[in-house]
Amino acid sequence: MTVIYGHRGAKGEAPENTLASFQQCLAHGVRRCELDLHLSRDGELMVIHDPTLKRTTGRRGKVVEHDAAELVTYDARKGGPGAVSPCTIPRLEELFAQCDFEHWQLEVKSASKVRSARMVKAIAELAERYNLIDKVTVTSSSREVLSALQQHAPHLQRGLVAEYAWLDPLKVAQHYGCHLLALNWTLCTPERLLKAQKAGLHVSVWTVNEPALMRRLADFGVDSIITDFPGLAVNTLLKTA
Image 1 (cartoon, rainbow, N blue to C red):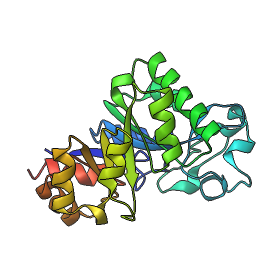
Image 2 (image 1 turned 60 degrees about the vertical axis):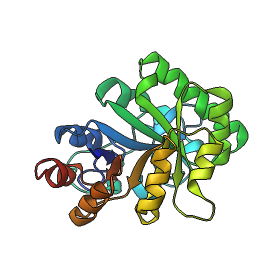
Image 3 (image 1 turned 135 degrees about the vertical axis):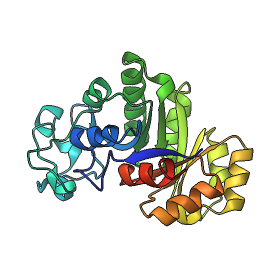
Image 4 (image 1 turned 90 degrees about the horizontal axis):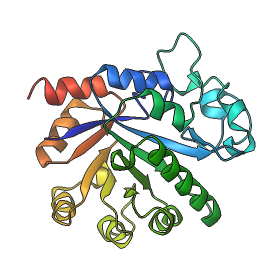
């Protein structure tokens, strides 16, 4: 059975990576989500995709140039449709406290060695505080981040995000002791899927927004899909099953 992850909450229905977006995802009965993390200037985990503020808030500058107390006041409604009232950038802690997801894919973008270590340690501490160690997989396309996970938080599950097939994604995932392989859907051939699953990897495919593609990938046997439209995915995969 292919399970559904809401991409940045419900990116196609509400401003991405905001509390409203994750609540929309849960409203569809989808209790798995994928989100993106950056550190604030004062070291807090902020839920935002880009390293800069421009696309989602219209503000100038980088996330890392602002303290968390400032960031949580910035309206991120430019990051998607469907919001009448302001939707601010959340701390990861806020989502952990308010959203009852059964599994979280936490994507960490590329970062320096020092920064990767800081982020990994912060995630581990927060996951432990909220008793979510077994409900979290930290994903990244960055070797620095995956190395930091091995070194500083080996008890957290890891996942490789693979957008291109310059190197064999399966080999890279195995090299870093990953539990999950997040594949761009264009890389998800039946052969690669079967090989990854035989190696014990959960294969999560993104970003899957078309009903026909959802059905095709489910027929292939993918473990999960990541979609901007969790409600559509429920109607396509669960209500027509």
